[in-house]
Length: 296
Image (cartoon, rainbow, N blue to C red; front, side, top):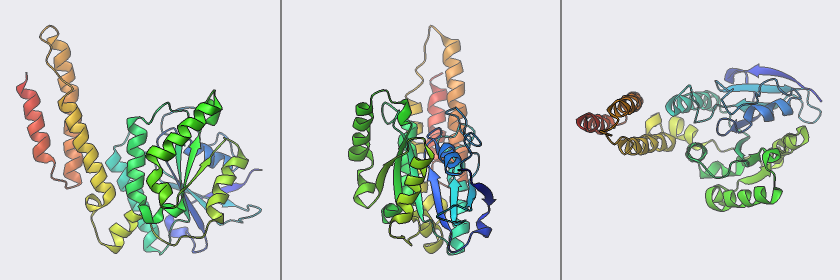
């Protein structure tokens, strides 16, 4: 069945709306699940692992036979977007959450998507998960559904179940301990609505996300929040990794020069992001750049 949708701004949300945010890494199926929930396959999703979600966008599902026009789906970009930095994504998501929380509106739930087709938890999905955990907080875990996607890409269902068990035991154990639940999104409308209904049927949790409480209730700046600190840690880790990347090759000086140039550009980007977040990383990165130049 196809439902009409209406793009909705934070100022047009209502107290009785069931607001559900959909989060996860780029290419995990966020746009796909929204397409199936609205009966509009292919409208937003593309057959690509590149990001198709450029902004935080909310869609109201109109005239659903059970939920009427109260379901609002919030599509969010992942923290591994190739066009924008994690800092920009965090600022974008936090701005939307602040606008809604100022109106005393809280999310009814959050769906976090993860590709079961991934052989292992690589760096980008791991970073997304860590940022999501710091953004939502343990107190809001009861409103979280951890949904695995792309089961149709797994040749052996037993292998998929093995990966799912590993996610529960190693990466999702803290959130599960605090009340999150696991579901499978099987790329069908029925499966998509089963995930939504899992949230709707649960006791309505009125708590805000940790990031909302930190920014408004506690008056913290973005870099002082748990999510902001996690981003700062990621920057530190990136600098440390890059510091080990370039080793001068006397036999290929042009290749070394090229690698150093790319490295310096990346380090400069980190420096600008840290400065805009007002995080005291400037001195460390400046020292790192000096060390790299000194190798030449």
